[in-house]
Length: 162
Image (cartoon, rainbow, N blue to C red):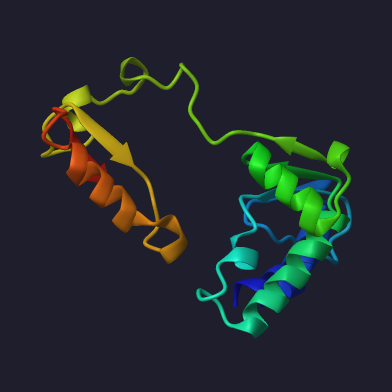
């Protein structure tokens, strides 16, 4: 559904709105859209995690990602590794890709948040380690849990998984 809307409806909406630029945050952007495009490619895990998607889904997704990164004016990668994989597998010129790491700056401290620190993660004692993840196999949450279990008696932290 997402791709049908993204490829069929979104380009029409962008034209109607007179958009000059669109930033697609999830690997694939509207190929028929006019104007400038930026795409964020988080990883190319669909190439390496074959058991997660069917062969057809991997080929279809790869086709869209390939055309999107070639169509885009700028590609954002979230790590140097992702950048090198995009260059290697998608044959995108290196100067077209900028690495923007997914981490908060020092401006995002507990002092800059309106809620008192004890309420940021309610019902969890401090200190804690906050881990963000999907439950997809390639995220390897089981490894995180096993690793934390091995060190939990030596650290005063609680693991909070979001």
